[in-house]
Amino acid sequence: MPYCERCDRSFRNISAMEQHQRDSSEHYICHDCDRDFTSWNALQQHWLQSPLHEYCQDCDEHFDDHDDLEEHLESEHWYCGDCERVCKSEMALKAHYRQSDNHYYCEPCDRHFLNENALRNHLNSSTHQPKNVKCPFRGCGKAFVSRAALVLHLEGGACPSGVDRKTINKLVHKYDKNHIITDPSRLIGGASSNDSDEDVEDIATERSWNGFGYECYFCQKEFPTLKRLNQHLASPVHKAQIYRCPGRHCEAHFSTLSALVQHIESQKCDVYENRAVKKDMETIFKQMGRLTM
Image 1 (cartoon, rainbow, N blue to C red):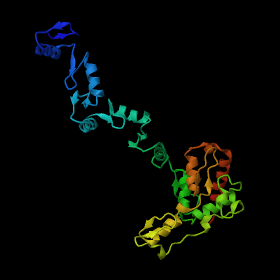
Image 2: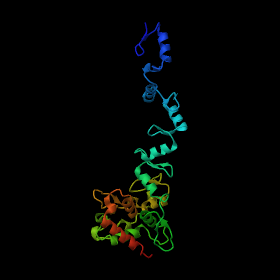
Image 3: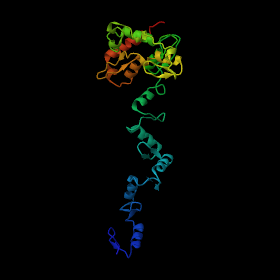
Image 4: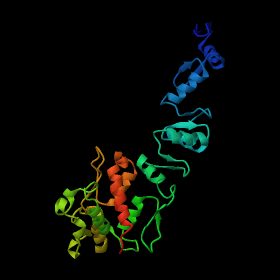
């Protein structure tokens, strides 16, 4: 005779016992898995945790596969797919984005970023920061959110003053007398020299054509025109990394001053609080403002 141990009842046949299990508040059965639970909550937790079920608890609805469940959650709920978490409201979802270590999220812009550095760069950009750093040269009038952005502007050679990367490098070599931010071993002529490889101009000719494109001798990258190749050679891509970060335990080197300044401003290492570096940089920027072209 079929017997229900949980309810201490006997039944005339299996059909009667199954009817009892369906109707009783003491039985919560998953028919797919043939498992009997003591509460509705326990049954729901089974559906949520079992890889055999694709279940939305809020809607008490089952789906054929995980893609269908994901589509439902994304369209009907405040759902974080990366963490597989359903939030109660849009505010709760955004709070999750802010607080979770799995997300790099800018709430004012409602934008996600790949990593912490990308988010920091965004927060330090003109989107969120005022342009308080003015170009010191007459006839320019441009302003920037940081000193790194100002130096990048000057290095690019677009400033009406005519200042370019070569000018900036010579200025730094002149006033960084103790080589706090420059590496003398990477200067042409060593520590006693103020020359860098900016004084050596690499120019490609038609002989750079390899049958498919104009090929860079240094990196083998191909360009569709000779002009594009020479622009590549004129960039800092293959220049010596003459700038160094003097921070403790930081051996970073850079080919441009703007890259070093950006590194310092990012506060990735302790160099940001280094007094000698601050003094050196203040001298360089002060002299930069006195340049006349």
